[in-house]
Length: 195
Image 1 (spheres, rainbow, N blue to C red):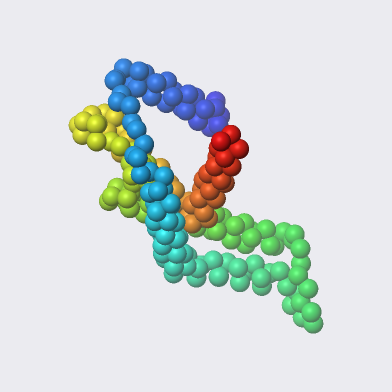
Image 2 (tube, rainbow, N blue to C red):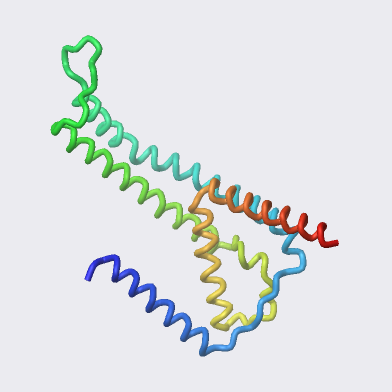
């Protein structure tokens, strides 16, 4: 059985378990806070700022930690890609000598991206766990029992969703803001047509 089919089977099993858990407990209906529409723009602004700060901090840390080795690998690729003695130092393309250094450089860059994504997610989850939660800020959870499965489940999911949004960077939050703005403008336009 391949790795891909294991992921699909695991996802299917997770959906069945989640359905069974949620079907066996009584969930309270959650309402959107009355001022949620006004708060949404403020929350998106804060989310954008947090994502931007995490993104920039990660860029500084990753550059300090990973750039020296990446520059050395790039220098090796560049040195092998030029013919010694040529006046114009024309690059050699796709030679066997270049494959190994290029592959090492590509693998190092890929490892750097994975590390940055993991650290961004860790930072986003930490920020959310410490108090900034996007979904919880929009919902009225006052009727929920603070010891209930639903309360902790909502908080858990909110921490990871907000953490993921922060880890996705400022561009992702910007796209989310644009999508909401477009939806709102279309809704208002359609509402004005029917009025």
